[in-house]
Picture (cartoon, protein in one colour):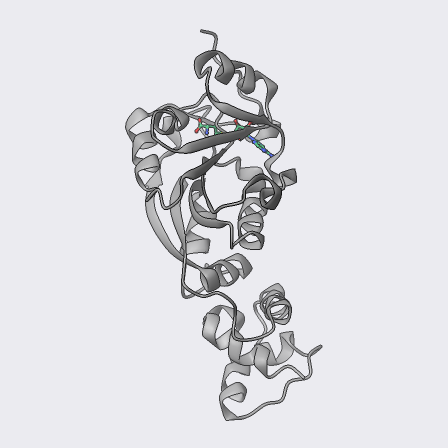
Length: 250
Ligand code: SAH
């Protein structure tokens, strides 16, 4: 059957290596019966999920891919649309596992959406640009970013493996990385969550500055411990440090 033609604006790079696809699916621990695949394209990952005893749904924005999937996987539950507009709370009563070789142009938005729905999305396995994958999984140092801290607060994150450019049609310009996020035991942060997000964002938006400077707009009740943290830059802090600072916001 005629293959789907790759469309750049939809971030389409089709994986063409079966064993890598199988390996990605195998990263799922199947913690939930509900599995949602984002952007299945021609179904290279889907084929390994399709026959399992799970409640599988896929969401695909591209009409041509949807047409292809309907022919090849007649029983597959396909939502034709934009994952970013999908209401997960309405769609699922129970928890879900999310998987995908994601479109790289919306990878941060996909991760933010998982974060926002963290009580539904308890497992996520996905392929991203290598740089994004490394940043999300990175616990220390320059690679860390806002998303790393926010996600690491609620998920255990593992960098699984790197995928080379030449296993995609067409090949992307950069390498890819597969990561796995599993919801941790933390129900809530031990501080005001909105403030926590604001503090992390402010710290990272001026990441070269010390926190004393980047957090100027906030009034903090400081003590010795906080003074030491304020001399550092955002990337030097972990989740617990940010919680300590957030608690000191007046
Ligand atoms: N998983 C397939 C395709 C990866 S390319 C493979 O590994 O070969 C990314 C896929 O995401 C494409 O099929 C693209 O059409 C789809 N996509 C892009 N933006 C999307 C969105 N907002 N919502 C759902 N799917 C999207």
